[in-house]
Image 1 (cartoon, rainbow, N blue to C red):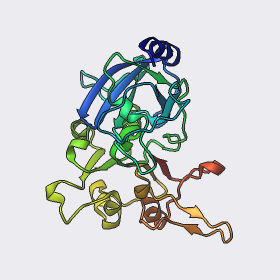
Image 2: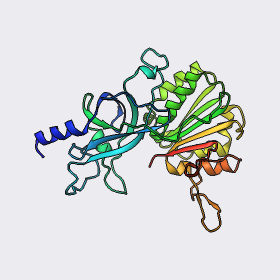
Image 3: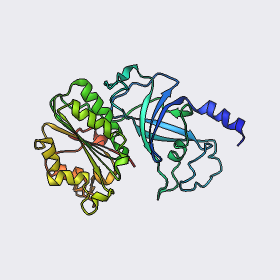
Image 4: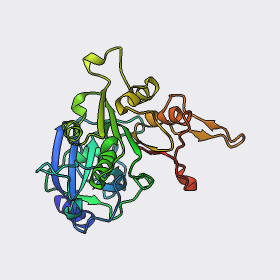
Length: 309
């Protein structure tokens, strides 16, 4: 394609600008996208859509992409949960109603067994000021709607799955939530915890907030890795929370690796619940009288989840 053709496609397809970009490291970044239109009304925890054209360059160190005739002018789109850095540059809670951007927390997917990743290798060659597509609708069932002011709220995530949890945490702090709040995030290395300093600061400011950072590939973890599931089965989570988990007054939010979440299926013949082979958080909690959301029948439980792939 000629530079003129590419410029025309960008003019036609893109409706937002990359306002700020923070590269945490070469495979992880926090971006703020400013749409040409007013930021759509939404709730913390919901997701929007980012997009770039097939014509855009890709990061060189990623799984090679096979060109398919007819796709060169198409837009690649993917849903991403909105994130939030919670505090502004002055150390105060953001007044997000005055902001004209939305935040995303993105990891570079270099390769996939399902086929060459299409969007993130293109996102990771962008710079501030570049143009991008942002969907005009922000939606999703993953919200704080069922939470009452004194409830205990657990945010359990892996990797960039903590993005919507940070946004919901901002909302709880803005409301003056009086119940206990605990967030735990499991990653490979500490450098993958882009918001770690923020959470340390929030714990100093808010006595009802606890953040647990779990890493699995640091040298000191050899032979004794702790995953999200381990926090629950060992009792460590309740110890740090300083209370037992009461299904009547606790809401659990899960986001990230499907193996961590462990969404069950139902046997059509018997009606029996079938959990995944890998023990997930849902199975652990349902054995303790918690119940997961069932979005297909619009039934709310006290386990709320958002799978990331």
